[in-house]
Length: 294
Length: 275
Image 1 (tube, one colour):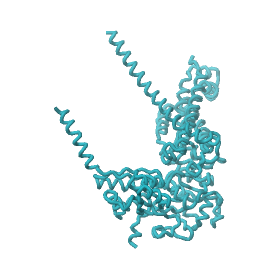
Image 2 (cartoon, one colour):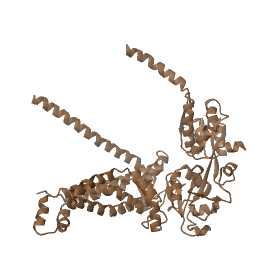
Image 3 (cartoon, one colour):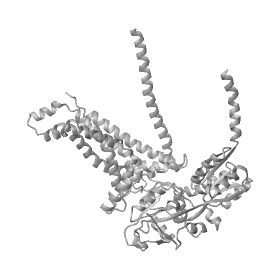
Image 4 (cartoon, helix red, strand yellow):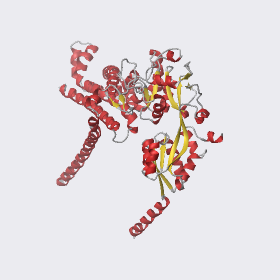
């Protein structure tokens, strides 16, 4: 009897290992493909021109493939989005775990999850049709499709991610710490900001990194609302063309395996390295500051 | 038993289907003409089950080259054939015959509240290459000009670049939009913007600009007065015959192919034929 179970057990284990292996294999193949299609760009275009060039004219004759404006666009929208989303996301998490009455918490959590489920094309549409004309009027900007609009919409999309991961981190802080702090005479506020938040710091850091990695990779929203001008932004209301927007807009028309096609894949490679960096940083912060529960 | 039947029937079925789909027309060329051909092609294949179309883009030059090399029966082109291309074809025994199927016309548009109503092609070029940056420089009421353009890989951009830009580059700060609809939307919502769209995308929330003193309209586009109009062509080897002729007749039919021309945002030819 037990022998049969052991055989079955081993079989199940092998199947699961096989499935896990498959997903790893797919990931590896995607990376191989990305490198295969992207690396030729560096042979066709001198790397300094590609990485530091100021002009992106892929269809001109002769073409120019300077990705610096695209990279700057991506970094700028991510920065703006993070400056808005991180404080709001973390504070919301603090309020939900520490202060909100339970009926409000039960009401707010699903709403927040709904926000996370909002399709990005819908968010982009709101930015384009509702927010852009308002921004134009309020700030007398040249265009409502700009860095600030893109940042705001990306913030809207990354707040739920940041909030829910940060909330988990705050939940994981043992009640004994809160009780000890209150027993020593600390106020609720002091307990939250001097005990609970520092104890959950690593988890909150992870939340921020995941939020940023979501912002930098998001495509539809920036394609629709960031304006699409390949320039280095000088103000909050300048239009930008982040990397994912450039890829999405141009890949369909780029001649197969041509210079432009390879250049777009090389941008994909840059983008991949950016998100990989954020995810590694997220892992690093969560590893380094891991707190033992007791 | 059943298996034997299947193995007997299968080749028969294949033979039957290949007899029905005996004719395939390979079409290659301009990405500007591509949407018309795709829309009309779908309807054409539905109406003629015996003919299949293999349609691909790749640019006018590639299409004509493929026609010369016998790789396609129909080449789509947004420009006339060059003398060098005609010679090249003759050397290979190909005689390219031109048929116009539609007129492609772009219109510069601004916000309805803009006081500027007319511009010259030179002024348009200087606005788009960044030499003119304020509406007051072209007789407007002042305020910076927000330049809206199509993505550089689109056929619409190509037309604009050829007719207006003349090899000059569009200023990097231009808002590059992914579709005609997005350009229309952006300009309709922005008092300082200027954009250009295909004829089919004009609506009441946009103001047309007169160019070189010519009013934009179907008649001026068809007569050739409108400076931003061009005919779209298909080229065939010799006078078309058989299935190819059938397809061209379909494309030129005012109620069939020409209706698809209108749907794709171009101007149908029948207004011209009526005159």
